[in-house]
Image 1 (cartoon, rainbow, N blue to C red):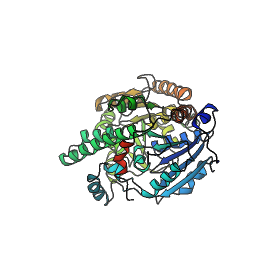
Image 2: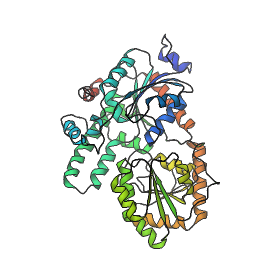
Image 3: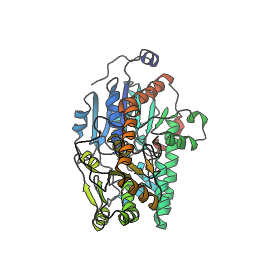
Image 4: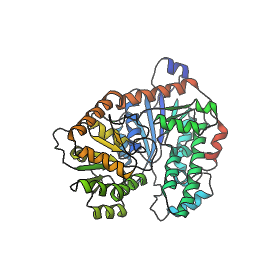
Length: 442
């Protein structure tokens, strides 16, 4: 789909409630929809494309099919470039770390710079074809020139530096701890600069918005940081009364190549599951998600825990489980996995970090516990009380239906898009120097 020629003024566009022409940029891909970030972005784009003209510029890995995204976003013009970011377990990763030390960018941003994508984005923004650009995730920002007339919204899915700071806090290796301390400080500086150089920043929770605001000493910038809720596909994730719940079964779902998820499962297997089995010896756990490491598989085998790897559909695994667990100790943003479990009517036990940023009431839609003994006790209570599981599950489902469908979330997102176009605030060009000096090379 190509945008029509003859650009309207911003006042006409907003005043007439006409379709906006939006350039959505996301490094790291959007398809398959197999991570929380991809889910949030994909569904927001799909909903917005019902009313607006959206061009998506993104990347796909060598093992992914770039044309599949276009087929699943038929209302959008999709342009996907093949790009393989260096993986943390790759032999090339130490070299990437060394190179990032010579840059103001932390390694997680440095490795996602892609000259071809950046050049195409700049050409598009300079063309005057678009009314608004979305820089989706902090990793995308180094590839989006903000010194153009087209306003840019920074869509922040996590307060990234908090993830790295928590990694640093939980690491016992003194050398790694020192390196992680450097990384989280560089990440925080980049996050602040991204908020300053964007016309508007949209966080995914009030908790994240408050953190970003607290890190700013610029009152004008603070006024441009807002929060939009996280959503869930309430039609895809529904209670499954046709699937019998298996007694004493626990489930966790998530991308197992994301370190916070792996850390959560190793922690649960080592510290929490033995406590549960002292009371309920028949308790079982299924870990459902892509790319589990050898370390996790070995730990799971030793503990009699099922690790599935990639599955075509997580819903059957969630439906069969009595309790959904989220024992995260590291993370940021919001966990879509909890909303998916609640939409399926499941009782959830989570750490405070796991449920961070989600407006869930303790004892009403969720149970929280932050140490192994308490987490085990809450889980045991639910495994012994099917009625309590059902009560929590019904309350969670009702909350998802009422407030957190993707159509509702996208409507809020659209409001901020229109406000950004209408206000036409001039960005802080100087803030972009951090990125402009660091984005050459693939």
